[in-house]
Length: 326
Image (cartoon, rainbow, N blue to C red; front, side):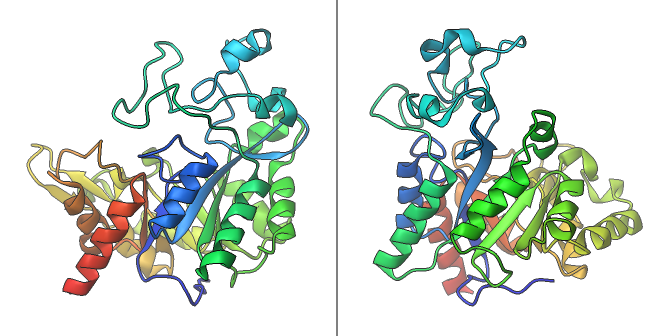
């Protein structure tokens, strides 16, 4: 089903929530930074506001990346969490965004990243981010793509909102509608991906995101026939899969060395691209001693077609150097 954009690199680098290793995730400055360092695609996670505006946020919750608890202390639900869907766009725009933190402790999840409390960052709408990327494409002459994840569509429907239909309308409004456009749309919900394709008529390239528990952790645990059958089913409606690196490369049981699982090979056999997540220079797996080595392993040894990275500058530079050396 794949039909790559003519400008797409053979091994794409997807800026995970923007250049989130350097600036608060999913803010427009993080996206501009990621654009400037040569990313092929910028990722947008999409949730809805109370007034049905698609927002670029990783979670349906607000209390891990904003000051919502201080601004709107009475808006928590019974579970103690604060939800984007309970605030209007105007209310959401009044929030300050910061580096991701643990709401229980107030401590940053990645303490060496952008300091909490410095500068000013705001929540962006999907439309605002698309305008930024398209504006930069116009001013630079580049063709950087978008990589949009629709977050928790079944949960949104329980709240009375059809996030897939609303998100597709915005993407279409900004010219993203066909498989030849420089866009991927991803979701963990297989039923919703099928709905996107069959009911909502989405012709853009679809990505089936995969949970770790869906796949064996080592080659010995793979039921190869069953895995290939599952991937063949995915290939009926999707163009790519998005597994975590945890199921693409695994450490040996004794934690010495690693093993590339059969997942990429099986997916390629089914004509599916493979874009694993997430490469982080400040959170290396036990089986590598450098970020360069992790990039080489993911893109060239495991043979993934692209990777999500919190540090797209380093990932682009290493990818290009390894291509030149080959």
